[in-house]
Length: 130
Length: 130
Length: 130
Length: 130
Image (cartoon, rainbow over all chains, first blue to last red; front, side, top):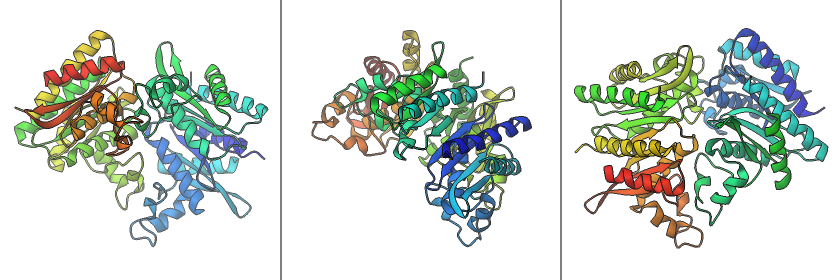
């Protein structure tokens, strides 16, 4: 099935829920290489989340780890601290989910602009709709 | 009306036409400041166009000039040659159209990945649907 | 009212107070997208603050958070640590204030070059004069 | 005399003339090292000129050549073509003027956003008021 259509479905699911919750967000879906497949920014979003959502999605896809798991190891004191400076900048907190086909990593979704917990929940909503 | 919804309508129009024509393309819609509002990449697109479409859209929005007009002045021998190195990199050929509200520049759309002529036509299709 | 004139009023207020206090400072005012609207550097300022003031202003505007609040969440151990590597580099300490029109974020002001406390106080002075 | 005050006088002169002429512009004044001293963007300016004005001012200051002279040598076919890729990006066309104290280069002013001829005239106006 079309990667573009699946990305759009994920984005639509996040937009709908975020707008119901009153959050302005940016949502990015990338492929396994971290290249953008789809993106949307809701009207209530600030500008900062535009870059953050993309870096979140890239982090999940490029390392095959959800943001919350990446945070455990990439934070100060963690075993791979400093890795967030690679690949043009990564995000070591929640709000991103790996997209898989079976075991294989095929991409990532990142959501930014709401609260940390809400971004995380929205990213999971999007991944489920992918 | 929602900027996000209008961007999505523009992207959908480009996707439909590009797929009918058999082209793989990336489509970016940005606001007047060049920040991404919406993006899609069709399944047949290569990766290079992902960045090109965004830079095309930014060029149109940030200078209020369609790519074909910008090309006239920003190419080697043109009066403002070298401007393409500003603002993180601009694109001095066609495939981008300024989005306006009356006289005011409110953004830009860029399409990349087809032929130059087809990118240009697709960008105009998207702008008309915005 | 003119955004430029308001930015200039904010900058003038900061310059006057900083020079009275004997501090050399750089002051930046940006719009909601983080693009520069106005900037001044006093004669006593070092060069480092030129970039810092701009990044402070961008941080406040792009995330709608004053620097002191952003610092709480973006520092090592904070929930969104690593976000300072996005958007070309952000500043997770004080000296920046969000500029609003009612509820809406319309920009940010950043001051750098004095002490941290003085930068913070000066940024608030500038925001009040905006 | 204060470098800041002189920069402000130059910027004010450019703003007044540009607004009379109906142009939206960005104006940057930098020191001999290319570091920003003062900056303003008029309300009618697009976003692209924000970076262009700064790169113009830097070009003039860092090489002690007005933009129109730099263009002669730094364009395709010119003896130092490719130099525009140094120093974070330079601008090889008009709209910038070297600021001097006697023979000594002490900075540069750059104006962007109007027509090429008007930018050039405005930069000369600003330099005269510096």
